[in-house]
Image (cartoon, rainbow, N blue to C red; front, side, top):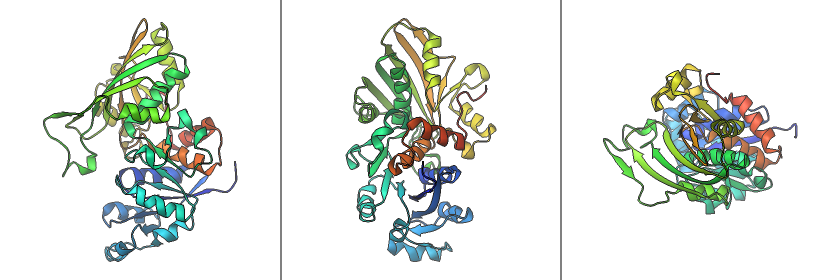
Length: 346
């Protein structure tokens, strides 16, 4: 690995962007050169408070940002001249135009799961396909739900236990910071097609997965909840399935026996553990709910939609930069710096 730090910027300082920026600053092999945005509200003012240089993503927004009392270090193009990799966390649909700018400046780019796979032709989950990212100009970190799907199914696949998987996803309505003006109330909204998009999206990372997902959006704003029925490749015991899941990176156990009985319980646990923003980067599987009967396994887990993809973004930066060629080494570096766990209360 080179002794030179990877120079990184974040375009879009929102839910994902601010978390990626914080994660970059914990990595000893990366330097956060700056963040870029078009708004001038409390989010960007927080970046200034944290000592992060702020750039204007669009030149004609610079005056409005400065008028709000936010010092501008420059425009996006000047930022692109001084970095190796950019993480694009802009709202869905904007990335395609941004990609043109990144190419012009010869900057490698990490995009988010709201964009289509076709934007980059490559979708990323570190434990599944890190090596195929090496030498590429761009990749797309898949969505929160797809990330959890790939993590857990790859864990079973790598242990030789997975034949096929069928999952039901209960999705949060909107991000918590937007709950004052968007989302749904007092209802559940099924996705209009089966499979829902998460299953096919997981296959952009691991094409051989036999997976079907069904999803619905519920009237809560924090975290997703998954229910899976797995057909195993052979008969196995409960301990063997649990061991396969725990051996994989970024999967951690929770237990109803500890009083972690619902989505809010886990969120409170993260706060009690001192996690930044109460974030949970791991897939949280209820170990004492998981059941195995012959060649079938049944389990449920929780996904923190605001946090789970943050470690993947960090690994994607290294893979694109080519400074670490081994997936397990990058995962270990990322997870140690952030403080990920395998079992929250053990």
